Length: 309
Image (cartoon, rainbow, N blue to C red):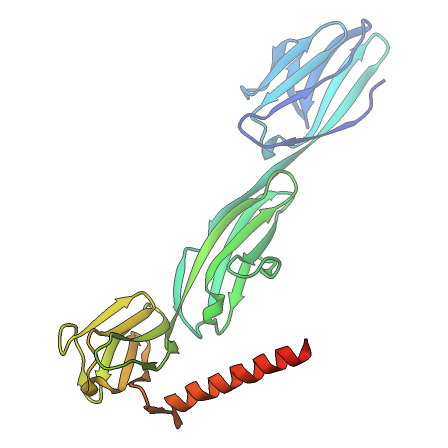
């Protein structure tokens, strides 16, 4: 008639636990106990816990309800029944599961390239949650980093910057997820700088692109002279990673080598860029010869196309 039962509930402010106990008309006395503490004897409440109440007390059922269940409610509950012949008991063992919750996580951090970084993510829950770190700023499927509360990165590189996601999971509820951003500072490097050819009287633009964190500041030089907007008919414009040097009306004196310098607090770098006119020799090759070679190559490919078909 009386058998143990096992209940699994969530710990939450709205959690209600209903524990039934089936009885019959032979019962003379009934009581509910938690471990060795009497909760109720008949309709008389012995427990001082306001969350525990008698829900049903009829000739066939004697049931209690616990409101706002938490981990301290876990343990055995006994329905004790006295009949004319002998006492009987029905035991319920309450197992309380708690959804994962991240209690402490590192703040966003900015470091220099080459530094060592340690991120912390502490989570609670029952069963104990599994904590996983994942790098979000990489391709899908390649972002797994570690399965541990601590994420340690030694000699951090610039491509390891971005958002890192900490996920705490124990299958009781949806995982608790938080994010930390790592910003990696590194000195500038010029990724794009191209020589430009333009005729006298035309508009010419030299461009220089540099990657850096923090963002690089740009300067332009011709030989040892620093250039500035409005001087000698030029304009310097800096937008993000790109800097441009614009000549609105190119003259013979504008031709030559220019130096783009990119600087931030970690260092600087530079690149030489040439503004040249028609017929100039750049890197040992005459521009007119280059044009003639391209024309010859185009003709050769066209002839090959007609022969093939």
